[in-house]
Length: 379
Image (cartoon, rainbow, N blue to C red; front, side, top):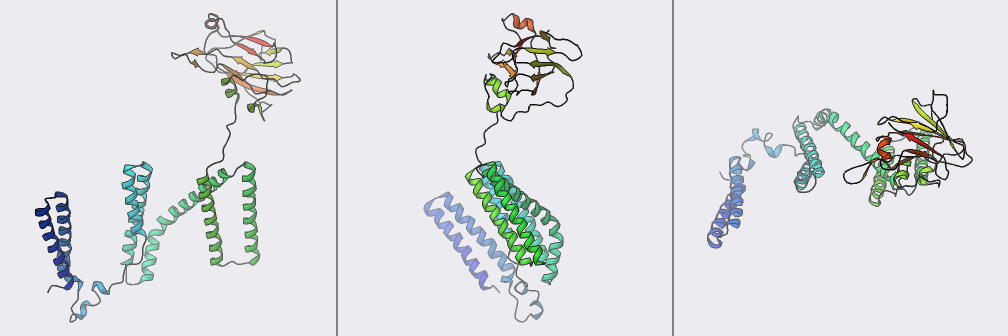
């Protein structure tokens, strides 16, 4: 006996085959004919399956089949996992034509959705007891879901906090804002502690509202963009910009004026306001010229005993590459050293002094704004 559903599908399949033949003969269009043939093949397959299962009908006289018939089985529970799987497949397809990160996210979403979908489908058929099925599903899936969900939640919270912190106009505003937030958290905790007991609904509502506010704030801050951060200059920037003079610059702001105990100090230079006094540890004397090893790092201490801030500068005269650019810094300098302060320099001389003599230059320590100099010899 052919059921009503099977008759409708068989008629649709025959009509599709007829339309494909008529279109192919009348229009001679290959693309349209292929499309109609594909539809006809699909309808034919569905019709054949429906005839095979007899439209899943059970005879009214077959009482023993009532409980095992497909119509008597519980329907599948609502699920978002098929939607996540399809979105992952769409993202994978889009990522192949756009960005790799979209493809990777699509793979993750499709895999997660497919695994969760399989687990849910398996658990719903574990028994006829829905409570037992939910328990089986949780026992199997919780060890996978909870760590991943916790990691995602933690990442979202940290990223949202970072966007808010970087989106506030100043560091002071960031400190004030998060101080207020910390105070509110402390106040809320105090209120809950004084009440003695808080309902799960109340705690869940507070956490949910906090998460919404945090994510919304992070989203808005991320769309607005990070605040402009000015790069802090260093003595290397001063040397590159040829600003190793006696004037104060941004690199000199809040500069350290002390040096911790260092080992292997090659020389100490002390500026008294007019001259540079040079001493080499272990030699017991003063030197008008300092001899440094070539290609080895050497450490120098600069003490300022003058009444005005001063900086120490050393001319490096680097080698020139094939493009005419210097290989290394033209000069190295400290930040401005206040009276009684000390700065530390590490130097590497790459060319011998006789190579510089042929160019009419030489290595030299000096203090800008004064006549204090010390010659340097590199063998």
